[in-house]
Image 1 (cartoon, rainbow, N blue to C red):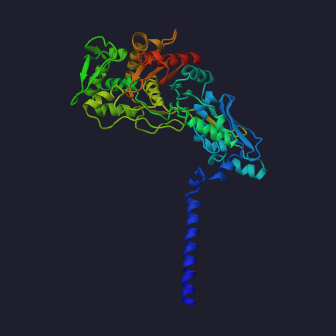
Image 2 (cartoon, one colour; image 1 turned 90 degrees about the vertical axis):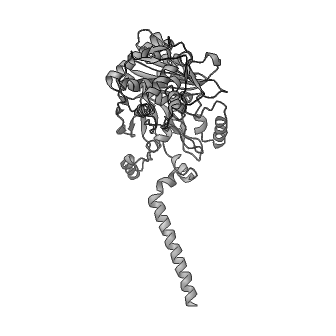
Length: 476
C-alpha cells in the first residue's frame, strides 16, 4: 500500500511544483502581457476607477475625465469638440480599448508609467486617489479646424508640421467621428455606436493620416528628383520626355497626362509639368538601388517615428527596369502614408534635414511638474543643403508656373508638388498635394481618397491644393 501512496504523493508534488513554477513565470515574465489582455476585465475596471489625465492643446482640454453618475464607473472620459480632434485623441472605451494618443500615452494618462512610480507611492502613503498625468500637444487649434473644414465630408487626410522642429500643428483624417459615443459608460450605447462606426461605408475609424498607405503618385517625383540631384544632375539637366515610353521587357507603355513641353525637357520642366515619361526614363537611368536608397533615407521601409499608432511606408526593394520606371512616378508597389510624404517635403524645405515628427511636447503631473518632454530631433539628412535648395527652387516653380498654381498664396513663398495616383480601374484616382511655406515655416500634405468630384476633374492641384492653402492661411 505504501508504494502506490508514494507514487500518488510524488505525482501531486510534481504537479504542485509545476503550478508554482507557472505562477512564478507568469508573475515575472508575463505581467505586462496579462495586464494588456483585452479580456482582463479586472484591469479595465481598475482603469475606469481612476481619474485619467487630460490631453491639452495650449490650455484647452481636448480629452478630459469627469465624475460619472454611473454607479459602476466613478469616472467618464469625454471629448470637447470631439469630431475636430478625433484623429488625434482617438477613443477610450471599456469594451473597445483605446486608439491614437489615448493608446500611445495610455500609461502616462492612467498614472501607471514607471516614471510616475514615486508619485504613486506618495499617493498611497497620503491616501490620495491615483491621478493620471496631463499631456500637452504641439497642435494649433486654428490649423486643425481649417484642415477638418477644408476636407469636409471627403475621405482624406491633412497634416501640417513645423519643418524646422518636427512639431505637428494639425493632423486630421476624414470623415471624423465623435469619440464621446465610444467613451460613454452606458455600455449598451457604446456597443451600438461601435457597430455603427465600424460598418459605416465611409470608414471613419480609419486614420488615413498615419495608419493607411496609398500610392503617392507624382508626389513621389520629389524623391526621384532628390536622387537625381544627389547623383550630380542639376535642375537644367535635360531628360528624354517622349509622348509614350515603352517599358522594357513589357508590352505596356507609360504615357503623360499633361503637356511636357517637348520631347526633351529639363529636370525643372519635368517637375513643373509632372512629366511621367521624363521621370520614368530618369528612374531607369538612376537605377533601382539609387531610388531605394533615397526613399529609405526619407523614411520608407522603416518604422514610423511619430508618437501615434502608425504604419511604415513601403518602397519595393527588388525591381526590374519596367518596375523601376513605374516606381519612380509613385506607382507599382510604392505605398505611403500622408505622414511619409510630409516627411519628404519637410526635409527638402528644411535644407535637407529631416526632423522627427511629434505631437506631444510635455507630460506633467498633478503638481504641474514636467515628468517628460520631447525636443526637436534630427533623424537624417537625405540630401545636401545645396541640393535641397535647388529642389526648393524647383518646387516654387511648380506653384508659380506649373501644375501647383492653385496653391499660390499672396505674400507667401510656396513650393509644392501635385499628385494624381491611380489605384484601381473601378475607382477614381487619389488626389495629393504636398508643399511648404517659408513664413510660417510649415509643410503640409493634403490627400483626398474619395470625394464628390467627377472622375475627370480629379487632380492634385484642383482637389488637394485648396486644402493646403486653407491650412497655411490659418497659420499666418
